[in-house]
Length: 361
Image (tube, rainbow, N blue to C red; front, top):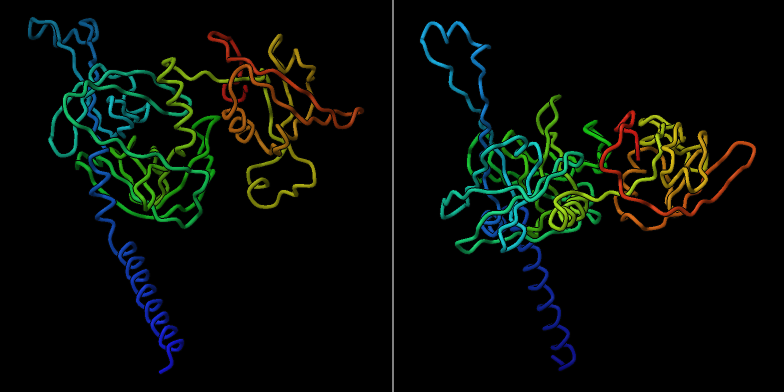
């Protein structure tokens, strides 16, 4: 055999073995998630909360006079999960997991240590909360991924504390993105068929590299296999503010809006070259939109050259901005045609008596 032919043959054999190894590796990924689970479980905590309920004697006079003593207060407990995000002891979970809690306990995976946690900040609108524990031992934070790069069909894992079964791992896929489920103005959920139950709330949704791409939050009451997670890119911005300020500093325009299209139109049959947008149905006096020249009846069609189809999309675009930043709106005004406005955003006021809270942005 000639030397050049022998080299080609060796090269082809090498390519065959490399391809075989790659195929076997891919098969292992699809057959088992044991390595991902083993690496990720230490970064997930179980959360147990207790809320004390004080009873008034006047509400239980029968027991008071029968037993001759004042009725004692009761308590309720709840379970959830959380994600360790750094070695300083910060933990992300859902707001509804720790809402109104008088006592928050965190259970770590392997050493079974139970630690008291305090609330750094919480945000009801996105259902997120940031906790802090005193770290007396080594902890393993999880790595954040990029939820914008996810595709429908990507394999994901969920880790949590369903019904108190500590650090349970389930798997599934991303079933849909951008789901609106009616929980508030910032709905933009990832949908997954990875099994999620009560107790999974606040736990991570992971990609096949073990990166957190969502925080598990809710399940559908309509049937099994439909769970929802908050995209991690939204979580990042909320957590940043909670660490710095203990709250989320949101920009606003001071507009009460109304959708011109139905959700079905937006998802299935909207003609993107036709009529779409958010109608300004009311304005808050001296808010950025009012000062910038917008009027009731204006149709907002884009924000910074990104088309706006409904209020949820408008809110999501504003969420990516900071107070004091400037934005450019494309507006259609009857008898005037298309107009463009450059507006300076401001922080949402602390106290406002405003109607239709969910529709103000």
